[in-house]
Each structure stands twice: as C-alpha cells, then as structure tokens.
Image 1 (cartoon, rainbow, N blue to C red):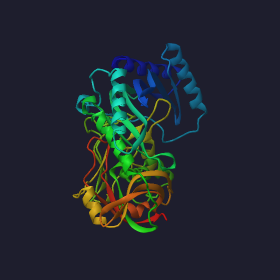
Image 2: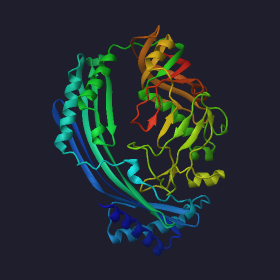
Image 3: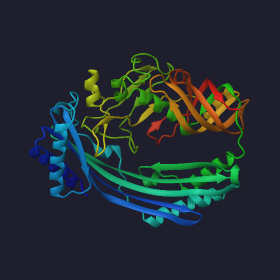
Length: 449
C-alpha cells in the first residue's frame, strides 16, 4: 500500500473520530509483509508468509482516552471503531496527563532518505531464503563435533507506518529487514550442548554470508561441549558482547519515565549523580543510518534528537513521552512508542556506550581468574533495589586464558554497584541498535560448585 493510501487511512480515522464526539485523536496505519523459512535435517520444515494492513485509533475526551484497532479498512469498520472508542473513553478513568502534543512541539521537515531505513531492492524469493537457511545448516553441520542443527532460518520483512493526529501532525516511513540464523547442537543425549548465531540487517546487501553464520553457530556449540560448574566465590566476570547489552538494558529500564513516575525504580533518586564510571557516557543516537532503532519522529509526532542519557558517568536524563513528562513536570524527550492497539509509552531506540581501549582478549588477559559469560538463563531483578541474579553459562578463565566451558552457575550482585565497576572493551558491532561492547566487572558473586 502506498504512503498516500496510508495517510488517507489515518486522516479518515481522525474524521470519523471527530464525528463520533472525540475532542482529540491520533491514528496509526501499518502495512507490512514478511516471509520466514525454516529448514531442518536438510528438508523444508516451515514456510510462512504474512501481509496485511493494521489500523489503530486513540480518542481523547478531556483526560479520558481509549484505543481500538482493526485489520479491516472498510468505511463501516472505521466508523464502528470511532464510535466504540468514544464510548470506551467516556467510561475510562480520567488521566490529567493524557493528551496530544502542542502543535509547536511537532517535528517538521525531516529528510527520511537520510535515515536509510528501507531497502528498495526486490523482495527475495522464498527459494532464495530457503537457500540461505540450507547453506547455514550445512555450514553448521560441517563443523567437527556438531551432532545436529536444531533449526536454520532465513527471513525478510518490510513495513510502512503512518501516524496522524488532530493537532496537525502527519508523517510516515518504511522499514525493511533481512535475517539468517542457526542453532547448532554438539554431543549426544544428556551431553548435548546448544548455541546459536544470527545476523540481521536493514539492507540485504549488508547481510553476512549464510555459511559464515552457520559455521559460527556450529563452532560455538562445539566450544560448549563437556561443561563443568565453576567455583563459588567472588571473581571478576566478563560479559561477552553478545549479552553485555542486557546490563545497559537494566539501566535503561530503571530510567524509563513509566517507572520513575510510579517511583518503582532503583534509580528514582539518581538524577545528576554517578551511575557509571566517570570515563563512560551513554548516548541516544536516533539518526544513525541503516539501523533498526532509528526514526525521525516518535509516536506522538515529536522530533527525535541526540541525547546524553549518562554524561561522564552522571545520569542526565529520564526517558519520557508526553504523559510521563507532564507527570514529572518535565519536557518529553521524544521517546514515545506505540502499537495500533495501545497508547504511547516511553522507550529508547539506539544507544551507544563509550567504548574502551582494550580488546576482549586483552580484558580476558587482565582479569586473571574468573568467568566469561556468553549466555543467560532466566533473571531475577528487583526493580526497586537493583538486586540482580541470573543463571549463566560461558567459560572459566585462569591466568587470562580460557580453560573450559561452564554452566549451571549464578551471577549475582547489585546493579548500582555493578554498573559503577564496568570496564568496556572495544568490540561493539556497528550495525546493532545498542552499541555495547564486552564489559568486565570485578568482584561479582558466583554460585557454582
């Protein structure tokens, strides 16, 4: 569906909302299609294709709001949606912070082409995706020690989004993605160990070769063979780049406006105080080209911008949409996101943590004896205190050298203390939305044997 058609749909929703009695409204239309191919044992296991248009409408009557959505775009459905939404809003509790942006706040004159969010090359044939999946599987099986490949997959998606509101905002953009993944298993019976590799890119031409992805999955699975439980005690822990972003994700969750406005965050009193080492900053960069978290405006029509979340170790900003900003007496940071069936909520897109000067290998060398974590199983995080405990697996390190794989252990500490002790490597992958390198943390508690 064309951009013009999506724009027309959102405008039609606003018009029926006004006729139904809404004081204000915003609307979203999403046109998407996706293909997914799974291969197992050299045979096609599953092939899925989906496509369609979804629409969503939020109406406001004073401080009362309601959201409705549909996948039918007929005129009757649009009218029914508006009437239903208005009836729901009249029964909803009053929220003095709900409401649209002032027109003066709205984004204007963005250059969507500069973001490079949509690959305009031809949609891949299902046979091409199947070939990628088969290639990844074969490459994983070719690794000595791999007993089977649990799954190998290739996918493609493309969608267009348009948002409009009764305050005059109207804007849209497209996104595309091409991905390949594989999950390999080493060993047999109770000695089986599993690991994976996956890559995704906005532009198909940027995607690594499927064989390299499969080979990496196989190599990782073999490296995990015959694991042991590590020693119990306090040791340095190196969070591999594959999972180090989870530490920063906990920080981002704690500074989310929804948590702060409820007082349910272990960082609720931390503004303008150190939360990271002095040499580190955490920056939101929503305008990076070809990156999945980039966007010219947020779900409320406000312009996105580069933002210092943590500057030289000191927390400088919450993550806010309009409602949470109003509740806290602040301005929105342009971080509203939403789906067709839900109201806006704050969320972060692209973030970059200051990289270190050492490689992961150099951090391993310097850590002496400790644990390299490459995967997590489950998590217990207290949102009010930051107490942290996660099941982990990876590799035991002695004298700066990997000795053997480990599993069935727990890494524990307090996030406030953990984040203040992180030492970053320089191995963040440039194509990811969250640029977080491997992170070394001294003196974490390990529960093993």
